[in-house]
Length: 350
Image (tube, rainbow, N blue to C red):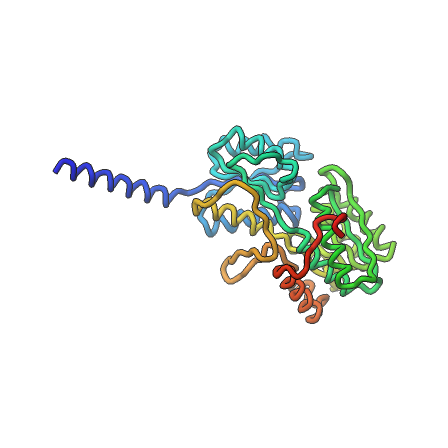
């Protein structure tokens, strides 16, 4: 009888523990990249994923913004870890080494890095997940659209900071342009070789004017907040822009003329990656390693489906993309997903 009572008590205790674990409310911390929240691009996309998780997964979320130049990235990550976060996310490849260093000192905390530079990270600690994208695939699609829509047979690319990550955008875009229009020329410029290259709209404006003066009637930017200057130049001078990361179609609207200069935006859904990594944590399936998101990956939020990479169509740019162009772009997506089109990751692969 006594043994039976002990057995019953153990069963009840295990049941209570299971219920408590099932009801655990996870705490998530996110540290933005240079430019911070409100950049209308990369960081805002990350914040959107955090919001989705807060609303649908019932997790506690908080975020922090780095100081000028992002010098305090690692300190912010460590502060989040010390405060009891279950998962800490760094937004941007510049967090690569800070995330690895913090993760080694806080082995009981999970860390994720959006756009982690896996090549320079070394051996990843088991509590780190690298969130990477096939940016070249999405850039190929908008490049093909640019190749189909250009009137001058000259299009441009404005990159932020030079390096392997932004080169993936450049290579995919260039390959897509050439796929759709072999006669088209692609001119390329970069804003700089340091992190501030992503936070300099004045420089973006200057580079866009330069490219447009050379005949480019469509310019694709992969430059964060610097890209806002590209949109300003487009409205003033009358050329089309392809936005990046978030849907930036509204940034090309000229209210005085009632015209929109946004051709489309390459959606690199950082929100999808952020949401999925938090969902994995909540469902106890988050493991360290590298995760790469491409055209085949998606999230359903309510009645909407969000593909990890895509091109944007809305009321702002619908008049600029005819049905035939949209149809061909979607056909190209299917060919890439099926492996019928191989998209280069670097300019050397072109």
